[in-house]
Length: 167
Image (cartoon, rainbow, N blue to C red):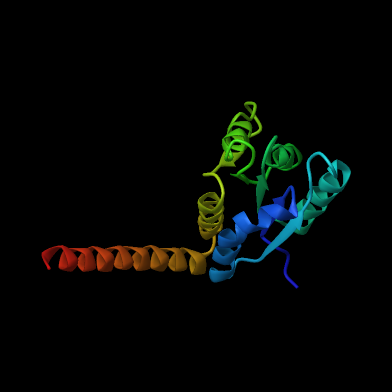
C-alpha cells in the first residue's frame, strides 16, 4: 500500500464533521491520505512519534485541524519541514480563538492557515492538491478541469437567475 501523501490530523474526533469536505476532495482527486486523532496537549509523545514516522514514510503535506487553543498545526510544524496547513475548528468564540492562535506562529515556523471550519477544510485540501500538482501532471490536469467545471456551474446559475429575473 502506498504511503499517504497528505496526513490530516485533528485534535479530537468531534473535528471530523468539519473536515469531511476536505477528505472528500482528496478522494475526488485520488490523493492518498490518512486521517488521525492526535492531540498536541493530550498525546504529545504519540504525536511526535507519529510525525517522525510520517516523515520517514514520505508524507508530503500535513493538515492540522484543532479548536480552542489550536496548537496542533504549530506543533506539527515544529516537528517537520513539510508544508503544514491549518484549519481552525469552531469552538468557544465560533472559531475566532482557533484562527487567531493558528495565525500567530513565530517567524521561522510557518503554518498556512485557512478559513474556519468546513470552507477552510475544503480549501486546505485543494491547496494540498495544488502543491502536489506541481510535480504531478495528472493532478495538474484534474485541477484545471475542476476549475473549468466550477466556472460552468457559476455560468449556469447566472443564466438561470437572468431567466428568473426576466419573468
